Amino acid sequence: MNNNQPLTAQSSTTARADLLLEIEQTPAEYLPDLLQFVRLFRQSVTLKQTSLNQWENAINEINCSDAVKQQDRKTNIKKLFELWNELDEEQEQQETLEIIESMKGISI
Image 1 (cartoon, helix red, strand yellow):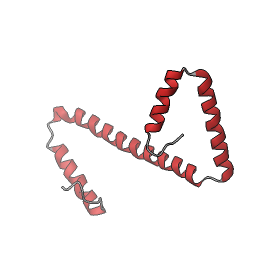
Image 2 (cartoon, rainbow, N blue to C red):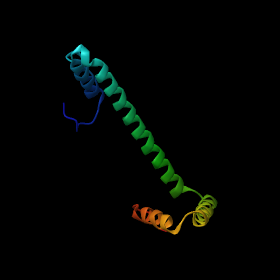
Image 3 (cartoon, rainbow, N blue to C red):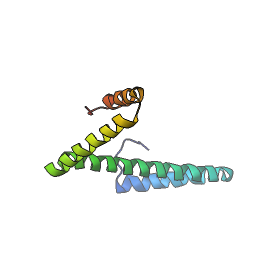
Image 4 (cartoon, rainbow, N blue to C red):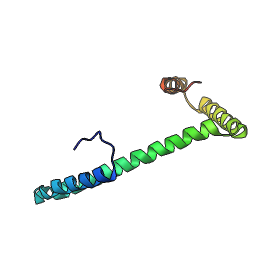
């Protein structure tokens, strides 16, 4: 089966049949490990998609929010940096600033 093909109803059925055939051919003593692997795979794919959706929602919120929300966000960020300035040592501040500046699309 080609992994680069889009998943359609037909290919989904074929993939399911192929997977079941592979499971049937797996020796019984390896089935608990295979089950654990499949569960971990499903959880990681689900978690990844959830994280991507949350990231997209956050970006949309930032880019599409009204002027009041944008101003509130700027005020909150300013407060955060003021607190950061009061609590952290200069070396920690510099390290954090370098991390922030290294992030794509972020500027201070």
